[in-house]
Image: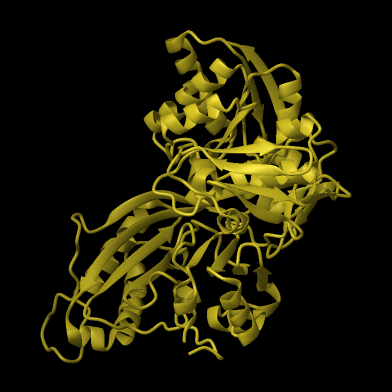
Length: 443
Length: 104
């Protein structure tokens, strides 16, 4: 991912091998909904600028296109503009000239509702059908584009392409598909390259990878000289972050890897054949959308007292009842306050998925998160809840106790507005290009 | 023997913001087959272990990757308020001690 770093010497090796295109994704949903909701990128500007400058210099030297997708961590319009500003800055500093294509894929609420009315939006499991009310709650909606808008930009002569939200594989598959390589191989290669050197046996740091395509096969080649791919390590990359590794859905169809053969290509590479592509009956793009969940304040408390730990569940339950009772003192609408109590040492990491939600050990950490429609109310609720937990009694002791250790001061931390992903739907656009807006600039 | 003794890697991760996926990986086909044949990892057993709806739970065996994959919807989307694991990276631990029959 752009900003996560790679070694300059590996990229240089890719240049020496004569790459036909350089591509890199700039985001994913892994950082949560924040980047799409606020426009704030997940990686620092300096780190993204460093990576972008190296890629841009390499592509310029080779005279090949540079393709960046899911720009600015989330691929919303603001995120794309942020990545474009970095490219403009580098071009100005280094005196580089290029034809820049900017492809935006943010969707307005009005056009999304119009598509919904026309029956062009369907839920993906486990979500329910979309409603206009839910669309109205979204602050940002992006469509995850496929290879077609990128191919459009390549055909228009762009040599630097900054795309909004896109499937990772599309960035790598776009050019080979244009040149007529078999779609199964081009898409499968794209899928393997999409996390760079994550497909090697043992990766000490993120790095770049090369795919060499042929009519009947492709090779995956680590560019870092210490990295080695094996058939298993490459096949495993197809498992990564996909719920089904044999049938991977792209906007224009399904990449089928069930019959793929992975064979070692000594000393460090892997050759793949047999992948195929089933064109979809209808072209579809995934929609991602975010909405505000409210404003959050948190506090933490460590517990070391063995008597409290011995009755931890009951102690927490009494605290929750007491805290809820106190919320009426800070707001006229106490029911609008939601409280999440995470207990590390019991089920803090897995929550509802924890098969053994029992406390074991000699200390625990309680993390209490208060959510309400305003920061002021959440802060006030956290402050009274902190006090309630601090002095929450336990049967062993008479008199006032201080039952939690706060590792930070002030004990209450205001987290600001928090967001959630709320769309898990597909849009059937009129054409692959209709969900995007293209803009060309000569730098 | 337990699953953790037979594997080279067990990892969990988001598959998009709404799904969680777990990769269980082996260094030889014999161990993979042994675990598959033991019947320890099925949609029924995995949905019981993680307390999710069996109709949402997928179990897929990948021979080239020498891996078994388990996928199910996340309790809440990634990064939502009250989500406990943004990237879903620490949800595999209960599998480490899963008993595997037919192994010593």
